[in-house]
Length: 199
Ligand SMILES: [Zn+2]
Ligand SMILES: [Zn+2]
Picture: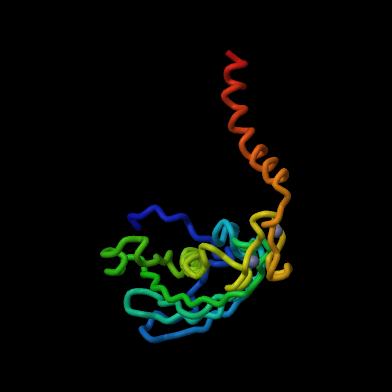
């Protein structure tokens, strides 16, 4: 009896692989090529793989003495938002994965933690965690539309890339400058008054 309480794998799930046809003979290998719909929440807040978009698996499964080693590439598309100019980012990705899935009852299964080495359930293995880890590790935490994106003008919010190099708000009428100060300060000034009014 397996001592861990892993969820029961469903071979119909797109990222669950059935290795029945892979001989359990160290060195035996089989290619695994399929296109599956991307699972939900694959990515980070600002950039991720759209749910249901094509995820192309180009992998090989190799029998090892303690389990099945899965290696190869996963390709797909990313969509997100530039952290500087807020433009939409859409690009493709290609990441490598390499992960051992231990056979049930193998020494590897007995001597490792579930988060170190994947687990097989009979002939089934689930690629979802390996794919998630590889994709999330590759993603930039501060995605940009291009490395030299100059961002937005802090004054007017226009795309600096579209503006002339001498774009500036320096020579603003001093009365406007005074108004701007007023409008940023007034909410702070208003709140203690409100509280006083309620009492
Ligand atoms: Zn940008
Ligand atoms: Zn501006």
